[in-house]
Image (cartoon, rainbow over all chains, first blue to last red; front, side, top):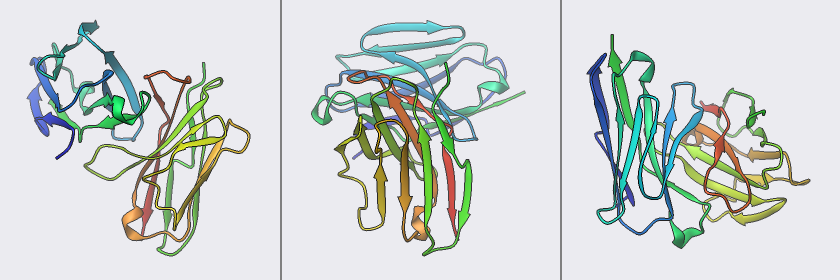
Length: 111
Length: 113
């Protein structure tokens, strides 16, 4: 069983819709990351969280440490938001710097 | 500030051939990672360097994969000989020592025919 689970695996929505992507993890973590990967392959870090909530533009990330759950929200979605969104965590058992990744959520926004 | 650089961006080879990838991390980043990302999966750590020393290579298939970071800056990852199942995107990332946030390069997409 993967230590980091994401849902849904695939998500298609119309432009302007509110998007939610979920991430659950099974053990205690040092930090959680939301990453964006476009078709070219490169990965961009969107957020790093250890508690609470962060906002950047139309993106909002929340984390509930007790429930071992995080969500990434996109408001007023746009076709350029189409990408794979990956949740990753720093697991203390493996050393703080190392990341364990979810399998990603493929988001497609239709104009 | 320049990001993590990787080359080549794309490579197509036949099985049993050799291939090498190059990574130049962000200046001052002591920690360097190589990941393998197979289509539809999340990245998998192959090897982690701290300066020019190996911190973790437990998931590196050492019979065919090798990596080095001789001067603690640039790094190369080599596959010899390649197998069909090595087709993947190879990502390089770097971070400041002891910091959680990693910065990723654009990746090298390898296709083994």
